[in-house]
View (cartoon, rainbow over the protein chains, first blue to last red):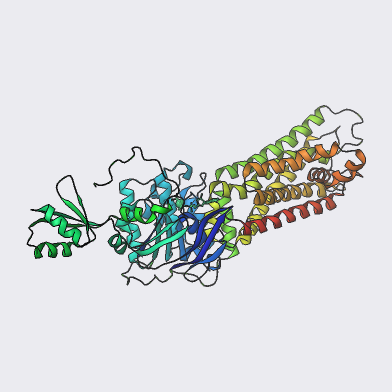
Length: 311
Length: 284
Ligand SMILES: Nc1ncnc2c1ncn2[C@@H]1O[C@H](COP(=O)(O)OP(=O)(O)OP(=O)(O)O)[C@@H](O)[C@H]1O
Ligand SMILES: [Mg+2]
């Protein structure tokens, strides 16, 4: 369990995290989403007691990080920036962490095996690829067999196989009843991995909910409809409060009414439907909609859009 | 890469979702200083450059002392024994070793910031003053052991090279043992002085700059002052303290060896104390 209450962090005159409160519960994967610079990494560093909050508190299993009796047995973290000496071997890195808690070297072998680094355990970490570095970071996070895990962009630099491996790992950790808190930019990845989501923008909480609710509530969801008499149906739907857009392929995208309501409306007017297909918003669409106003660093569109009406 | 392996002893069994796993084999009490000490020792021995630097200190410092004494003996002139400090000549390698040991002391701390290891360290052991204390203890012991080896080997080798007609001392000569033991102590405390600087400054290059400034630049600045001021100020410089500690001769403008050493210990303690405060107050 991770709890943040009124967390606030200022760097100079830049407010990185502002009065942020949330709870990450055990047993599920909780995604931590937000645009670049929204304060995800800063929040995680504050949970870990590395950055000191200007105001508010963060607790892990009810305690401040500083007060944990055996931190590695309670919390494991893979943070954004590398935390490994390039001149030290993978085993050496794990050994120096294990020493602080008297963790036996058998456990080091186990986590090296788990992340698939047994073969290169004696090689200097400076020679590792990005993905191997991530794996070593994950091994370090799991070393103390903690009940709470934080991962900041864990799939950064991993190949598709590695991404799937991390996804399965996160899920199995959650299934074992652990608290799994993971930030990511890859919405499609989060949609597959996370159960709950916490979305922030400009350091503030935007929403704390489940993935299902997030996408269901998004206005980006629509129902695709084809009918024998599309014009009549359109008028009826608009009269019923929906907004309708004709698509190039002859279908209509209907927003504001659910598929069931559309079907019943058509039935009552004896209109023949050829297709009635609900499209839930993707997590990406829901996310874009939510964070639209809090994006700080936006790239310029390569082409200025001339027609916003079609999808 | 494999996936479905068990994660940790005792956590694999089916568990109801929503219940955190029981902490595995969590020992009673709290993480301990002994663990931190072991960890710091592991950090030191698992980075090859540290071990190489230590070997470098030993070999080069002893070598420099040997060359200095052999050269002195080779060009020995009658009457040179007056005012000749055989102990000091054999210990001259200390002036080289002090820079390497300073850099090593700096890297103990700045190396963690430079590589990000500090975040792993403080995640494992969040009580920051304990981390600093463990570093001071482990580096201090290693530095002292290496420095005393350098001092004693340099001394014995140097004295044996100063064969007749050159004069030499033995450990029972007045002040000789003090100078040999003292040069080891000087090196060790200077290394901790550098560690303290690095705890405050954090960046390797900046800390090395400050260390070299304290050791090399300050004496030049002081020497440029009017001699009345220079004479009363220079005794406070680490460099002057080092010179008195390896010598048998005394200089009226300088502290006695032990008073100077006490001064150096005070500087070091102050730096480490400021370092501890900044370590606690600043973001890692
Ligand atoms: N150590 C620091 N000093 C100064 N400013 C900082 C520091 N760390 C973060 N910031 C600023 O705080 C804000 C939040 O940064 P943070 O790295 O937490 O965002 P993020 O959500 O992790 O972004 P990303 O998705 O790009 O990783 C940014 O504007 C960043 O520039
Ligand atoms: Mg980040």
